[in-house]
Length: 401
Image 1 (cartoon, one colour):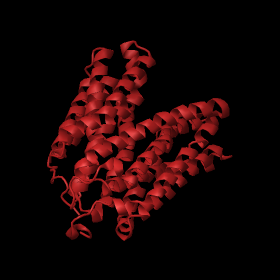
Image 2 (tube, rainbow, N blue to C red):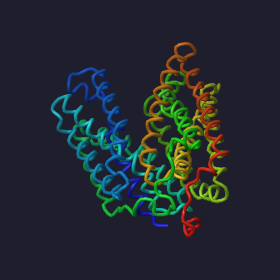
Image 3 (cartoon, helix red, strand yellow):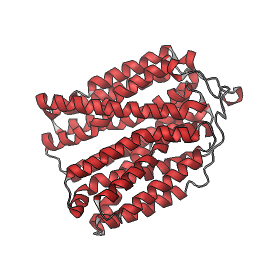
Image 4 (tube, one colour):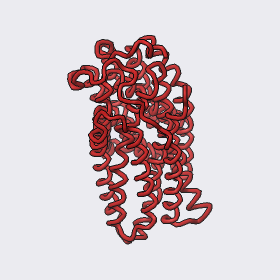
């Protein structure tokens, strides 16, 4: 199996994390520099998130069944890299907002194009491990970006503008490493290019509902977990950052080790993948609840570690199910729709947990994450009854390639 394509696409995903992660760390310095409130910066971030929500559909429309996904992914990667570099020269908050908007629009390629592109580059027999390797890019970015920002601002004493300049250059170099990436064509390994109407697929409808419920677990988890560790156990920023980095490192190891096993499960019986996914979702949700209610810090950290290591393993499995039951020409649109579902779930989860926090405190809020997580597990498990009937047929020579 050639590693270059998945490494190149993963590198694009890592560079995408630079601007977002850096902004969360450098927000106090940026607001002080421009003389604006944190609320003003938060408003700009909300606009950026809106752009991120719309952009995947724009990217899917631009591609529209044409084999230009690799080219669009590289170009948009260069766009967000240049935007990151340009932030260092922003003269006012409005220029910063415009650059964040451009970056948010460019980010849409990651959601809409990366997974469908990898599905056409690699045969069905290895898609599980490829998606797992690509999934490792997210925790890798979560480690590299904050560490880079901390090193540049702490060890080298750079201000936020200089930090963004360096990040922009590093992001450009990362994107340039993907220049040899090529699109092999839509549906290269599949008998059916278009497939039926995705909205008529019982499997896809259930998986979308599960993604919304999973978003209620995934999106608020990190924020509420950090608050809980601060309020309940008095862990300071450096300790929480180190713990999060350790969890991300554990997730990378788990994803790399699990990929080959995921392929074996799918090849033996595709209906087993939803069952395994449901079990992992349930275990991660219960681990968060256990961490919130643990009586001592070591048990709390152990439970949260398990939850944070298992969580990144879920998206590759759900993506594998989506790819298996969606016609190649429609996968970019479905990936975009799933991204919206995840965002909707995140907003609903944040609202739910904020309400619970007001009544039961942060520990109760974190523990309540288990409920939508268990619901997501049940919804995913239910697709085991429908996935065989909805599978997109693949060319016989590629079944065990």
